[in-house]
Length: 211
Image (tube, rainbow, N blue to C red; front, side, top):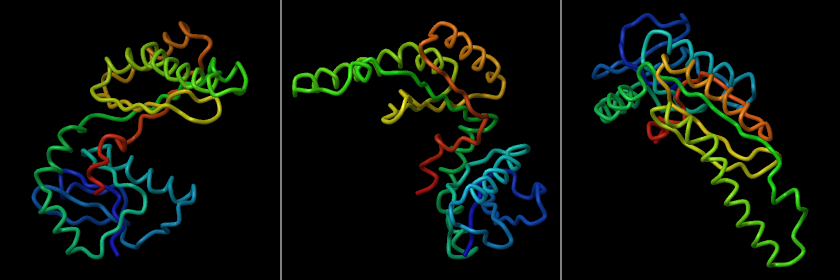
């Protein structure tokens, strides 16, 4: 069983750890450990996976694999690289020199502050209010950040005080501009709590490579 960390360009480039191996084909490389690691999704195992992917990003473009991605053997890995070579090369071009930053927006939704609905009409009014609020958050926070990023994804949060989560794909030279914009938005909207995480490998923008 071959546990995949990432698909990268520049096959033959020295790997960041002696315990790592690669299968190369068509100008691509699939990086895996010499021994299959624990695939139980513990925090320790997840962070170990993340550390390897981040180390690979220092000197090559990377398509990170989801934790637990495995193929039967090296022949299957080689066939994957050959069969999807053009697709992987295009995706690597899309993320080369780029990272992912995550943003979480928290606050107290106005509809929740009014208490639970006691009638069907109140429930529908709350649903409509929540939808309008999500649109306002997107306009106030997401839209100016998305203008700086090359690509972005958003999701309306459904629990706790979180109102929206988003991911942004940025060239390295825009990270400072992006984080300064978050600080400006926070000052402009003190009723919200904005949290930025990263930079991370671009997991949210290479999901198709997992299939």
